[in-house]
Image (cartoon, rainbow, N blue to C red; front, side, top):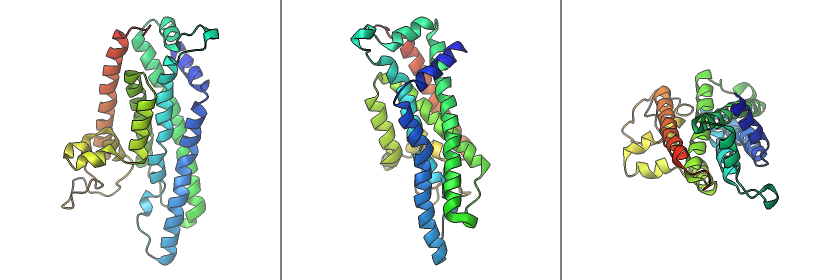
Length: 261
C-alpha cells in the first residue's frame, strides 16, 4: 500500500500529468460538441442517423490522455536528474525503496489504473453534459454497459502504454506509435487489408466494448472492418489478454535488467 501511495504521489508531481488530465477530461467533450452539432443539423433536416454513437466517438479519441499518463508513469523513472541531484535516475531510488520489482510494477500499474478510471469518469460526465447541451431532448441514452466498456478501454490502454514504455525505456516511441494509432490511422485498419487477424489487435478488439452498438456479431458480406466482429465481452477479454501478456514480458525484462543501466 505504501508503494501504491508513493506511485500516486510521483504521478501527481509530474508537470506533464496535467496535460494528460486536460486532454483526457475535455477533449472528448469537444469532439462530442462537434459531432452533436452535425447531428443537430441532420435532425432539423429530418435525416439524422447514428445518434446512438454520439459522445462515444469523443470518448474513443480521448484515450490519448491516458496514453500520456501511462507513458509518463514509466519514462519519468528513466530521466537523468540534474547534476545538483546527483545525476542519477528515479528508477534506482524506486527499486531501492521497494524490495520486490514485481511489487514496484504492480504498484505503478495500480496507480495508473486508478487515475485512468477517475479521469475516464470525468470525461464521460463532460461528454454527456456537452451532448445534452447541444441536442437537448434528442440526446441518446447512454448505455451503462457501453460506459463500463469505455472505462475498461481507457484503463487497458493506459496499462498497455505503461508496459510498452517499460520495455523501451523511452517515451518517444510509445507516445508516437500509440497516439498516431488512436487518432490518425489505426494499424488495425492497415493490417486488415493483409489479414483478418488484425481484428484481434488490442485497439480494434477493445473498441468493441464501446462502439458498434448493432447486433451484428459477425462480419457480413461487406467484409468491413467497422462492422462488429466480437461481442463486447470478447473484445474486452482480448484486450485484457494483451495487457497481461505485455506485463508478463515487462516483469521479466524489469527483473533481469541492470538498474544501473
